[in-house]
Length: 111
Image (cartoon, rainbow, N blue to C red; front, side):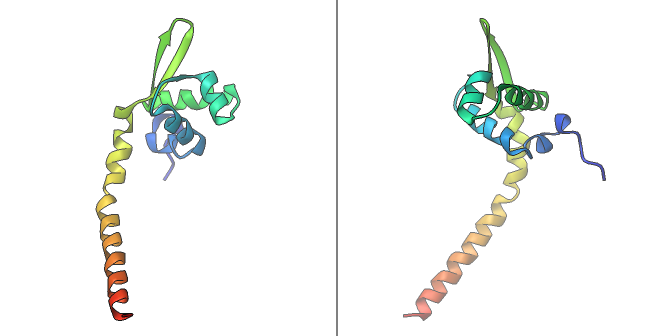
């Protein structure tokens, strides 16, 4: 099965670690491309290319402030990722409960 294009699929867009770094950096506040490049030690053209992908799939928003272009993580765009990963939350809770129960049983037999 062919993979969806990076610029049309949220999951493929976040498969790139540097894009995840950018999303994390933008989560608390908006920043200009130069700020992102400096903070993440990336070349500005590379940041711009990654931002274009993130913008195309709706994971970041952009606004103009005079001559500056500011980017921010788009919470609504992240919803599909959140909902998909949430399907595994119950699985991990069960796994952690099993580990805890096993540790408790082991602890009580060691006494």
